Length: 277
Image (cartoon, rainbow, N blue to C red):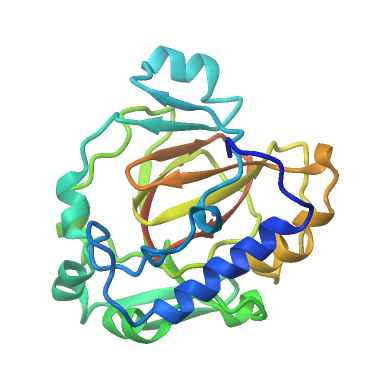
């Protein structure tokens, strides 16, 4: 500031993702699925093969102790945490209806979806949700794609953040800072790196691609993650592929310091990160 299943033909995953994007585009004006907080999700009748991940190379851990976290993950590799906190109250407050009622008139700062987030645009949150929160156009460049994530007015949004319970793990010498976002299907942030942190999905699903600090990924800083997934990912040799996994609602991904990562929202997604600075 980035499975379980059978064999799949080369290049099939980008085609599957485009199918997901098409379904989301056709259904965008419909009501959200039950349990999705009113946010647009995939069509209930969509074949599972279109929307489920092929494999996951990031370990999932439930009931992880702090000692295990420090010893096995904090400085060495990502991990997906399950069941460490109860954010059901926060999740309820993040429904589409509740967020618009509480913050619809609040001005939010959007960033462009390229590696360095060059351009910022300010507009009311309701305008963003009703007019810009749509599935990613696969042909759009990063600097033409606006994304709500990171530039939060903490005083204005404090009534929401006070209900969030972050993961109970900290690293010595760091302080926690929240970054909240809402984004459409197919959107995401291209490869970048920064300090360590946690990212929790509140609604939707977010796919992560990760590389260790010593392994710089092949990417263009002004191409979206979706474009990278279509154009570059299928050409990568197995040894050049990233670690990857889809983080489901209620799960938290931890990424260590300086790890490269890119994200791809598979649905309209609501999410919050806790950066350890």
